[in-house]
Length: 215
Image (cartoon, rainbow, N blue to C red; front, side, top):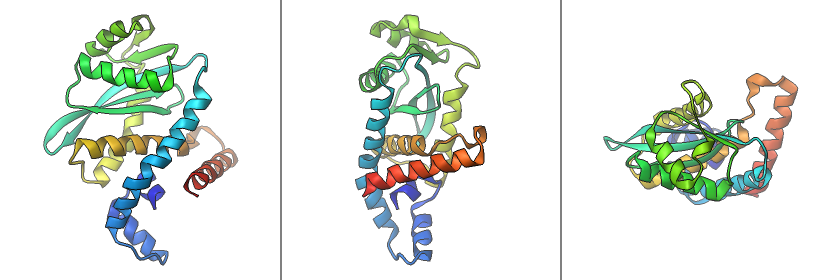
């Protein structure tokens, strides 16, 4: 139930109807309750396993970017940190995109994941100011096309945003963005880059890991 709602661009009522076809009769509010309660727990464990594997990894590169999200008619900012493999490391929501917001976002990412070898950003000056205060300005790289990795990572979230008819509270946006990012990481096999057999093996391994977490 949680996997269906978070992984695929489905609404609460879509999940209710799909489960009903499988003989499971529940209300869409039950789906909401379950993902709110168990989604962050599952996503947190996925993230912890990922962090333990990647800490100390040499040649680790981060890509940072911020995207607009409409919240009750007001624009807020969803900051994203993505590594060179397309894994979403951190998602952080703020009302502004100034130095203070960039600094809070970077501190959270660095504390949780450690320090990378290089950090690629766009031309937003808030990044440079925050990195200077953190003593990491020499790691910053700025390029017009260098940040395509993180910009492409926004697309799955945009599909979910449309399916959910946008968000209404910053707290809900922050929770869903974090959960969705970690679930997306687990099942992101870049199937266009591997053969069918390799993709099936990776998909089975990811599903087995999720079932172990949910059991």
